Amino acid sequence: MTMPRILIVDDDPEITSALSRGLTLHGYDTQTEHGVSAAIERIRAEPLNAAIVDVMIGADSGIDLVRALRAEGHHLPIVMLSALSEVEDRARGLEAGADDYIVKPFSFDELVARLKVQERRAQVHKPRRARLDTATRRVSAAGRDVALTEREFALLLLLARNVGKVQSRGMIFDTLWAGEGTSSENVVDVYLGYLRRKLDPISDFGFEIKTLRNRGFMLDGASPEID
Image (cartoon, rainbow, N blue to C red; front, side):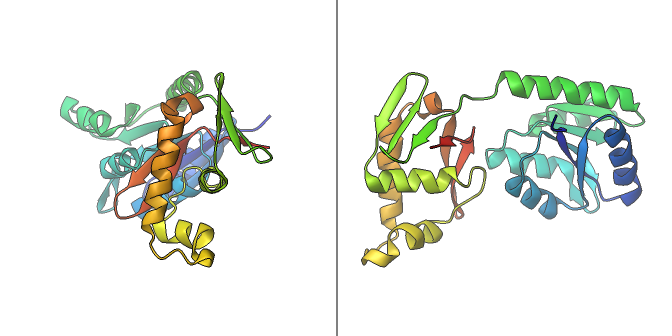
């Protein structure tokens, strides 16, 4: 049985070490980061079941980390930790997008119980998975079956193989169009428009194609099965 993977984000190595040891004893595979930027990159790059984020991460704010992740479209369950117990402090964390908030000191039994609640909620709301058929260039899910052109399918396949990772417009253009003499990267936006119209409502397929301003595009949601 695969152990749930939990990311612990705190600037204090002693705290991350203690949390990691305790959660490992409770059957979790733990990862640790001590800064906001590193945590964001880890979450973008790796499949995780949940994150535990301290409100204060050195000079940075765990609340800003949560807000940035939600702005990028990440749905990872997040439990915030803090020594601050005022209602306003808890409200700020939850309004930023945290799923739960635990005030220090706390027991491991309480932390594990709350993590399990968030894991169950994530499973209940886990989106359905689409299927991409590379032989027929069709995408199907929930009784829908849509035929795509060769270039539309190649674009969706590129995003599907990098779920949760931002793909810049230039990278997509270089991969799919640069070798054919197409002169403008705007062709990427054109074909993304085709995809969105053909798959509308795209939620039927368990994912979204997100546009991240000044960064690129990302497939967010359930990773499609690729045949």
